[in-house]
Length: 257
Image (tube, rainbow, N blue to C red):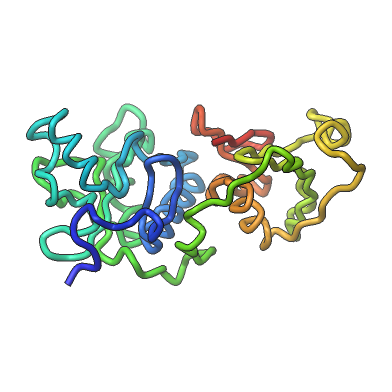
């Protein structure tokens, strides 16, 4: 039996990746791995289509059906509702899969399918056909390849007071050296030499100390300050951050909520 009735899963049981983007724990881990593979192999940071295009609550399914007619599933039967055809199922609409091979849709689709299958997503499983629509029939099991075990209990983010100070971080990235960054409520900025990190640190801090953080502890700080976990990566051996405005992942970027 499915774990939840379609569209009736509480958001607190899911992982929040962004506003309106919620996924079960296993699906979130698979999605992060697809993003990583696509970036490393093709230089493309895949993104979820804006809107409720991960998990879709029942009231949103009703709204979309009214707005889109037959192009949206009958409420209570959407594969985005965490059940589909009597099984647990999570679905994601991927906004930019075509960027895997610009101008060559067939090649982009082949690459997209291959990446999805590596991590356990299924493709091309709904009618009418939606090439951007991928599914996960094991959404609550974290795969062995997941680098971070996602705790659904962290979905509800703590409320930060106006007195919360910015942190100036010295992140110990092991063989990749030290990474300097500033972290505040909903903001994570990677500092590079051109930013004059010492000057920035003195502006945002009330003292003169860098906070030393092992890379393995960075996710805890990101969660505490209301930042998503999948906003950084190593690109060509260099620390890089996701810019949500243009989808780029580069050194010196700033992520913000």
